Length: 284
Image (cartoon, rainbow, N blue to C red; front, side, top):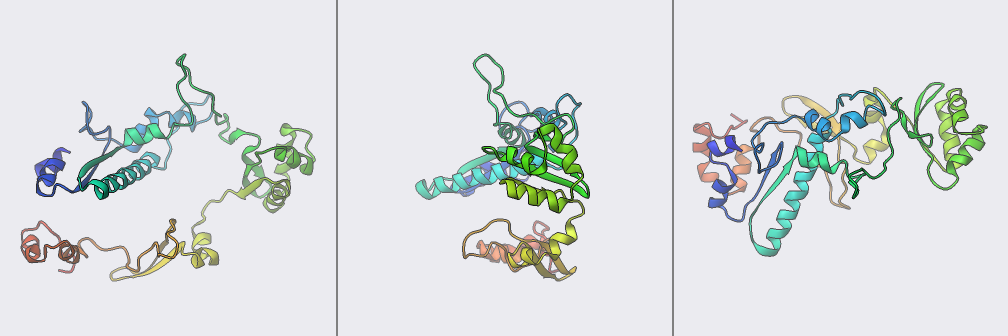
């Protein structure tokens, strides 16, 4: 938080002005301790929490996950912390400092196992060396025209799948499925009470062109003042009859500065803040 303190926006500085404020700070290693002001990067916490070994498959060297999982986990954890702080303020009127961290969020992701009394970890299913899954009933399978992801868990579900496929055991299932089409394997899985979907790549156009995705609001169209017509993924959260997406397109830098300042009661100060360069007015 040193940069925030230099410009007067540290938690104690702003809460001295507005004590009932909810202040959230997301850091790398947490708000206290010798590393509290250290920078951090997503992949560092993938490594520290074991993801880069577990995601590589049993016995393999660690791998670099391209997707920023820990960044997203830290954002979700911070949203939860702020929600709890707002709930506390609604009950007590007290402001609060909420905090999330990349380290804390990464530790939460390994909660499938615990440390036992003897110091060992409780058993958990490991990704196999080929990085295909955690067992024959929960893995990726190559098929004639691509790949499918299969989940055939539950009482006798996997046995029914093997019976329908004509496989005597789990080892025999893989070569049998490799000679079948994606459509045939998915139908076979459904008949057995299992679940299977095709593993997609380059799925952008298929997602945006899907009529059901558009009907359900998973695709949102906007008219942007500078970029023209935009299509973006819509809302993946639902609040009943209340719309989860707004009608406005993504803003340009500073586009809504004046309206936001007006809304929070700073209309009289807006012009001076813009002249001083404290606020960027995208309309000018």
